[in-house]
Image (cartoon, rainbow, N blue to C red; front, side):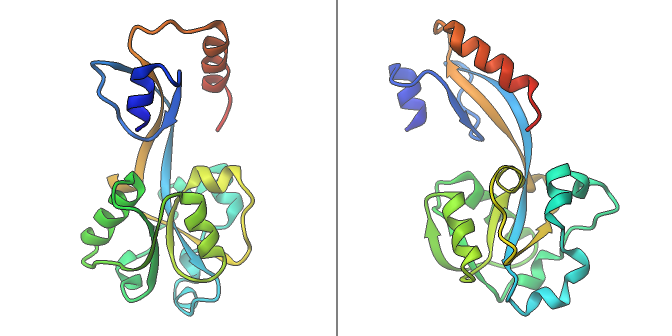
Length: 185
């Protein structure tokens, strides 16, 4: 839908992790983001993996991306309830790939539209979600959640600024792109 809105001129600029068709959509990388496993703190499985839990400060500083910080063995969560996004969502597709690569299909108890909503449901204690480190760095974090590093190419993606190819960029749009590209995420 965003691609249609860009092409029709209804919107001028999109910030998304979707890689649009470059023949008619121009895009530049804004930043790289990483998926994390967010688990309600009350889940008993957290006791087993306390050495893998990542403090919010390490996510915000991106220290957790260092090699010495090990990814959690995702297959150990195979019998837990998951809150995922709807099937067409990139985060859902990546989550399913990660689970398949670890030998299981997640037990999905709820499929939602927005990553923030799935995170809030995890905060309420209902199930595990896959969220981006961008969300953790830029929103209120709940102390009732444990965070875990994930590994592999499906756990990493780019966020892009996208606009219609050949479309006039207003001064405001140019300044926004310049400002956003120079500021830390």
